Length: 231
Image (tube, rainbow, N blue to C red; front, side):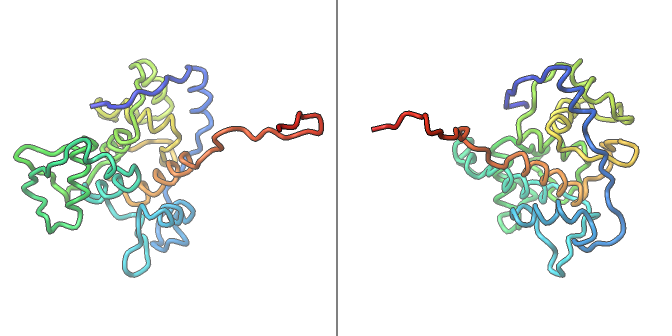
């Protein structure tokens, strides 16, 4: 399932990194984008990865389904550029007709193996996703770090509910944590079995966007009066 190999961080670096993670408490109450995690929400809206509802509200507490997740991943990782190389032919999905609003995005995540279907060529586009599922699928698109089991356990150790993370999601969630994409509750719980909300996804995407900000290709070397002049 894992497609991408990335270098392992040293144990010491991981410990220092984990100690520096902030505890993020999900805002409750108002649905207005100015009141609920506004910085993250505005960032993902500006990047056209998520949108407000027709009434102008973001509704961060709303739960996400598989079709919505597929659409976001295609935009965030530009999966449509990989699609043709992976699988040029359409995949038959019994419960996602061509008229479905996310048909093309679902085709793309299936063709690129970022998301999987179910028996009988079903996708269940309206099925809600847990945080463990959403984080693991996001890590699949991003590239799961090839941590050993011992390193994974060390990364997850600071989180009180780490034992509730499904075995199949542990390495992927360790990747998300290492990259600084995770959000937790007030007790530093990951709550992997809780449904994924739009607010959760906005936070995850905002951290991903910050990581993707382009760095200078080469360092700028200041010139001095003693530098030789080129002809």
